[in-house]
Length: 493
Ligand SMILES: Cc1cc2nc3c(=O)[nH]c(=O)nc-3n(C[C@H](O)[C@H](O)[C@H](O)COP(=O)(O)OP(=O)(O)OC[C@H]3O[C@@H](n4cnc5c(N)ncnc54)[C@H](O)[C@@H]3O)c2cc1C
Image (cartoon, rainbow, N blue to C red):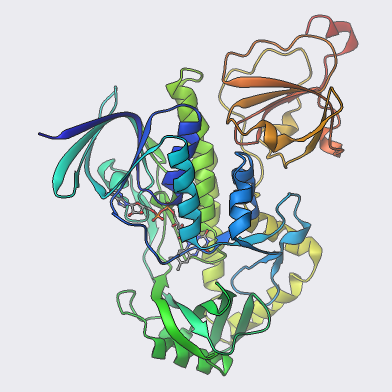
């Protein structure tokens, strides 16, 4: 007899994306189960970085302090390990840095949060079959040798690069195979470099070193002479040391390897992020050469984009078509991620012509005006989303269309009583926020998951000066913004 689990949303995969999504859904009161095939968390951390937009996403739910406490901020990011790093300190955010935090910590913190919110996280549960109809989705799988079944209204595949959900839903994963590989090692360094994010690049290859603790470092090596070694061939400490000596002239005293791995540049994007009641997020939707430390970050941001939409549809606050905006908004971000990692991959061979290009780009990136747009991209500040395909709320004011879909930083807000609050602190509950900056008139009824805040002033910013009302999405992007109604019509508002 199969154990049947009935839920509103089943999330397949308990990695960072699946856990973040589960938190978002549970916050909105949705019954959610996470099925994770591994009985125990993976001890080795692939990702080490949380970028500014991910920190904002966490701050939108009041979670940033937990992550900041454990991680180490570095005011830069990198593109293709170029000698000139990306300056994050100039970005328009409360988090102008990369937070070095191992993926294991990120997952632990998200899992703890999910459990706090009542998410049913089931480890050791592998999903093997999926069937959907107009009412819901059935999953089947195995846990500790016994079969289980789950009936859900929606299923999200957050089950990583080899996503079973994606395959079972018949979604094509379009792209290219691995053509080159690189190596990493988490090792103790007897002779660590003086700077925290140290790299060496020359015609023999590239070496990057990132501290993981007092003596432990992540060493990443692109050695053109080893770039054709297949992924399946295990990396040895000797190989890592030899490549480092060949490129940097030293092995930095590498010893006591904790993890050695080879990774490649297979690059693919899901053709659709949604097929009816099945959706994809994170690595299940996009894979690429892990350059610039972006994959986990984009996964967290996918989850933030999807959570409130799925909750809104399940609670009847929004039509099911709102879910199409998930693909419309996030697939271009996935596409841009693939393009920038392909560009970085093209800069990996270190032959004479590529070295010339690397030197040129490094030189250009010294200019703040050129550094900034690339820093914005890697940080996750990709620009505005298109207007949502929802009926605009009734309003007498002039729509401020240039603001539609824009991400708002954590602005300071002076409320009517004179107290000052940060904008994100008003979004911790995951609802829409109707921000009223004009005096008088009524707030039109908008039958969604919304709360209203009346404020006197918003932090001084040219583009926000004309705003009278702003309806802010749960993910901190502008849904709609209006100038105050003109005097003649103000009484009608
Ligand atoms: C070498 C390397 C370095 C990287 N460095 C960075 C970095 O610095 N910064 C960054 O942002 N990203 C980095 N990444 C990418 C990052 O690790 C991934 O993008 C991230 O793990 C994706 O998270 P996810 O939750 O989408 O998928 P995953 O982390 O892959 O999680 C998927 C989960 O689903 C589970 N699962 C799979 N199939 C099933 C099934 N059938 N049933 C139940 N459970 C299932 C898996 O066990 C897994 O736990 C790096 C990647 C590599 C390879």
